[in-house]
Image (cartoon, rainbow, N blue to C red; front, side, top):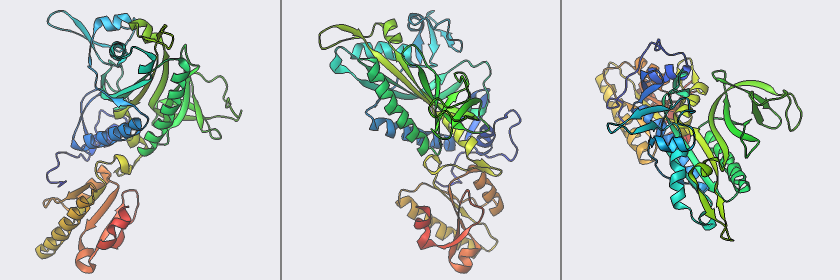
Length: 414
């Protein structure tokens, strides 16, 4: 991508109406634009990161046999009345059509997917199934805050699985829990499996918490067992497994998994016929990942005083080429020529590259902006190429550049 063609705008000053580090940096670096409290536009740089996160999720869920669909975000009132949540769900956005019909904007999708699955399932041979979507959600949060961590409109991955009995739900939930750890690891995050209050069919639900001082949750972590407990269910500050003292940590929740039992199957009369032709309720599990929330959490963990430091798998580009602007026209032409050659070679290797080809921006300004945007690898082509036929190379997180031969570039990137 030519930076001269990229649609974005950076800012030197932090937005005055934002407190969180993730919102300040993402707005300053041109990834998002604030519309209102808890409502953001995602610009081309931002949507590239979102798509990277979504693709990681898809790859890992598809490996365990899940199938993707897309459910409506406009929910008829009667569906929510069946579950008793039309009045009880306190962050529900409600709207009325011109014909007088009432709807909610989707905060979650149990009320839609269970009536759908009722039409798909007849016998035990149809089970188990696991269906997921990556879609926008709406919640009328009284206090939208913390940038992308608590929004009124956000992107979420929700997965639902349907089974013959509770034991099957629990077995599949363990598979999803392990898969979640892989997903977060690929996104650069060491998420902690955290026990939280459960429900009728399971003693615990599971949260996936990322320890950071910017977190709004409190967890109690066992270094020995590598698990934690949410503060709402902790009885004593000792590990339930090894009895060691637990460490209190601030954290950001980026995902959760629940055993739903038969609650929604009862509401929508979702049954299957077993081997003996007996009619039985379908058991279900629910598994969520906040995609935009995950993006915010990554920025809270990966940043320094200069800007963002994206982990490789979710970065908008892998390599940032900076063409230095110097006063000598002849030297400039050489810099541009070799820059374009490197750019094309990397693209041919399927490496995503942003090249700062702008002629009216000083080299210093380019470097400051590059730090802010936070692409993992940086190449500067300037005086050192003119003098020594070498390029300056460094990782975004490193302090110093290395002077390398062009032929060695791929080795340093990979």
